[in-house]
Image (cartoon, rainbow, N blue to C red):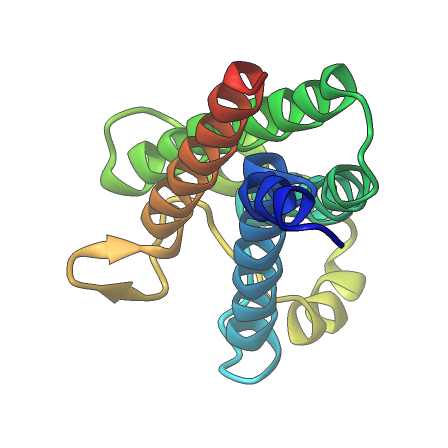
Length: 180
């Protein structure tokens, strides 16, 4: 290798660059967050309400999409493909931030939540069947906070984490679009 070719390769950006960095960061944050949600559910017995479960869908999309985008970036995929992956990641987690904001508002009583987890209990069935079902069913309401830290519920932390992931994906998008 000549001195000139060594100097040129030293200044060449690493394969993937900001698209790789951003998609890996989003993937790792999403995986850590969903692992934390499962820890709260399975170990600490803090059961999720229907809105909590819906907020997990974004993580179930972000983890494989982020991993695929990272693999594409590492493999030198076309910039348009990387931009599409990062844009979809950003939109998915931004939508999740909106859902988390809605859920936090339901918890704080700013607005009513969906009737399946905040309304009155209905259709209890027959009286004989009712007692057996009451022993096995735990209703988790969307408007009752089961855990708070520093004044925020898990829905509030979901908003912050989702906004962080959106910012990282947005940064990766902008930096990838600017690359020559």
